[in-house]
Image (cartoon, rainbow, N blue to C red; front, side, top):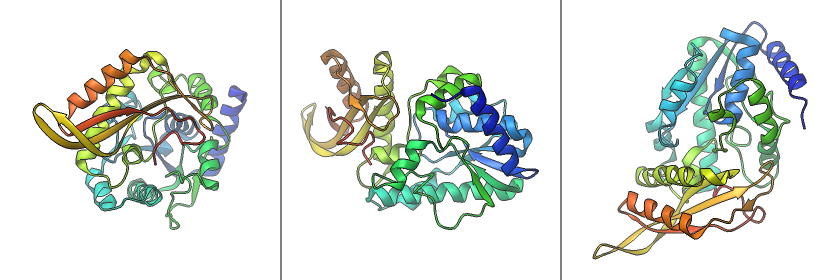
Length: 305
């Protein structure tokens, strides 16, 4: 386990040294990784930092309002409305790796735009060790590692948590007095709901995925999962009312883990499963089925894409 106090001292010193008297931007998603990195950077360089939250249209229900309220202490916080740009870039794309690369590049372009406005030369990221391992191997590209474009208009990228695991990041977050809603929040992928949609990302699929994920997080809170999610995985035949429908299939997944490198599917009681399927199928007229994923990691990954 990391020596938290020593790490904070070393990380803030590293950020201050790398950025110097220049300005920096950080991508803030509201997850524990980016939030902790933002808190470290803010402590290190103060007003030289501009935190940028990009509303990609791929976020959880109510995410943007929650970010605005949680980080209102940062005077330099920027909320970028970029939903149309992300969906336009993703239109027609079905390959998981290509989707990640598209999202990674679009994030960088959004950060570059803000960086030009605030004269920032550095990009701070909340990359952690499992992100690097999975991207450097053959598992998948993370939007902030393997998903980055070759051309980046920054003098440098600063990754103060690059050697930490998720549980260590939480320790740092607590030591920095981040709110519990942040420090204890379950992981959410940087590419957002795009990796919880098999195939092309559309507004209808996003609507289904967003509501289904909201239901899952509410219903499974008492189980204290490492990560719980819902994914739109395809279509199947169902019956709603007196009508036959060819509707969406939503897969629910809930896992236990220490660091995200391996994970075990949680055993959920039947009543909980039935309550979730009822709420999810009832939330959207075109959802025909809900299934529960019992696969561990490995052989599966935690996310679907």
